[in-house]
Image 1 (cartoon, protein in one colour):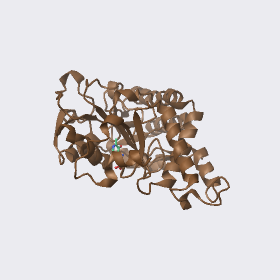
Image 2: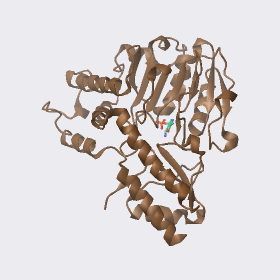
Image 3: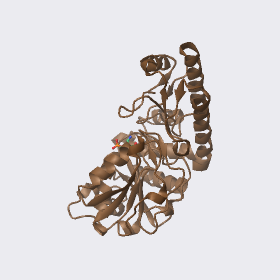
Length: 360
Ligand code: PMP
């Protein structure tokens, strides 16, 4: 039986990447060492991190005036690092609230300055994205923060919002590398790795050069972007094995036709699942507005929620793992990041159709 893992993160990785890591586990390229045993200051690891950064730059077409940093602390670490490094420019920042993670981001930023929610879809149970025309942006804000893909709520921006001259900061934890983006539209992009990049423990930060030197004096040294930029991400010991695996994932992605290639697949996967949800006759439904539906995290519910436990048990028995929705929204969620093949979504739809026929 094929197993398909729909976890929201840590999430499935391409099998070929895991096989390569397995083959190289004890002896990386004849070095006589596992990557886990190498000094982060040695030539071998330098080659690994240099290639990972070069491949990410190529995949996202990152302009030269942006730094690529590998940090730690995850997405939530950046909820602190972003205001600590940037809010000092003017003392205030604007936050767009479209779900669970943006709510936590603005709450954390308010500890370091005047962080203001410029719009929120909380009143709509985070089922949509507030219309851009209603955002009350402050031209004196140090930055505007938003969450292009809300992993828990299954809400995704289809376009990059225009916020004028104020630097745009994006938490791309759950949709980085899944669709083409123009990096030059952003002041800063960050992403925890455990969805589209690799194992947890690595945080990618892509930051424009002019934003490196505004850290508040209280900023912990391990969160200062300038330190990481100057040290080529080797300020202290990074997650060496995580960076190695991220590098393998980047090489895999290049073989899939890069971001443009995987975007077509991601679109096909999401379309297949949403089409079934819309056409299934109401046994299941997708609560998110059609214009804001995430390609990465497909949130759905059963009309009769008393069947939830049975649905989860039977799907698991059928090899379809980790479909339970996040506890704050309930229901179901199929996370279909880059490594999920179309066959996984086809298997899910076939199971759902069969379950609905038996229990409907
Ligand atoms: N932002 C988003 C969009 C996320 O999906 C997550 C984690 N699922 C986080 C932030 C928090 O990431 P971490 O657990 O790495 O702190």
